[in-house]
Amino acid sequence: MLHLLLSRGAALSVEDSDEWTAVLREGIQEADLKFVKALLKEAGVKPDEECLGLAIEQGWVEGMEALVEKGGVGLGGRGVWEKALEAGENGRGAGLEFLLERGCPPAGLLGRVGEIVGGLKL
Image (cartoon, rainbow, N blue to C red):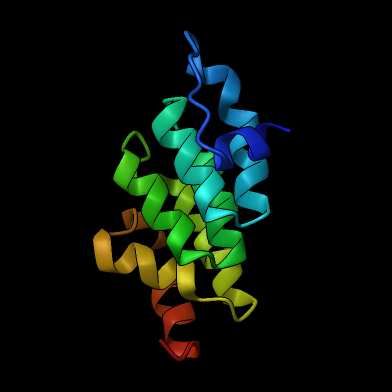
């Protein structure tokens, strides 16, 4: 229902946007860019590392871009890089490529990043 309202131009007025993070995660899991952008803009939802991790797991670059553009999601967190490395090990390197274009992994993960990137066709 919320998706329908947002897709038809409804504006949300939410005092505590943290409550909408779970809804944002659902939109990310469905890779629904229009819905995710509406939540970020209209509801002022603040994405967290888990949101970015979900987009990375799926290799959904447009979603990663939307989350990072909103701000509040750090690219240097170990958890985000570990998600990207895990996806890369399974042949889905879009998240790792996205992160490498925008930042540097934590020092403790550099060796693993090199191994996985060497096995990917980026």
